[in-house]
Image 1 (tube, rainbow, N blue to C red):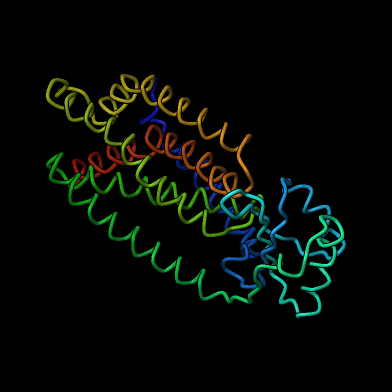
Image 2: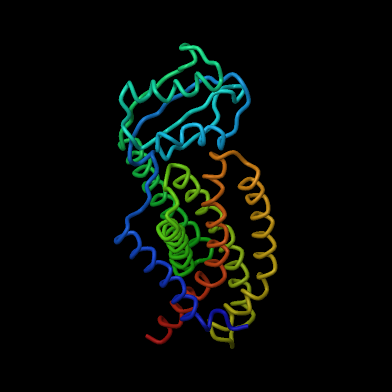
Length: 288
């Protein structure tokens, strides 16, 4: 098994996905969700059980392309968000449909508000700051733990890789990018670095006993020794997240989807990116 030694293949695959994502983002744009574009929010008390699909069909005539979630302590209220800036009359027309369908009263119109893109910008800025600070902290921690900045640099490159791949997938598939994606990416960063450190631990151990082997050979041995653990851990995690995606409500699915992509990407980077980057950096340094 020569995973590290075939690093050009894995780097090329990742680069191709990123380039495709960039091309799609530049040509047709990223499908930003309501949190980033602004729009209108309405909340109605329905007073009985309902499904998101039922509500979506009910308001299909208004062409809102909405985000719909359950609300209230008993989940019998609905929150509808749309990118459109609806007038008071348009809101009342939508509520009228609910009044007829569920026999509601005027008091069941809980609230309505317009919101701008500033909320999404604030979330993004704070997320970027969090990622930068976390990356610096991880770089320092891994450098001291493994007594080499090359371990830390390889881990950070893998984290950047994971973030860019997830964003590229969203750009390619045109999935709405909302605040849940930001939260998921922060979660992915923690998951990915944990898997990478497991491989690095084995790398450090093998460095002590396989001094006659090249860094690429040591990396391949370490990957092979931890491969079963990495795959089994990821499959278990994917099973849980998959259940959330399949059986969860729409708001949970929006969070579970980037997690699914992130776990797969994080596992891929731990095996095919982080260790080969470490081996490559040591080989270049040795050659110089």
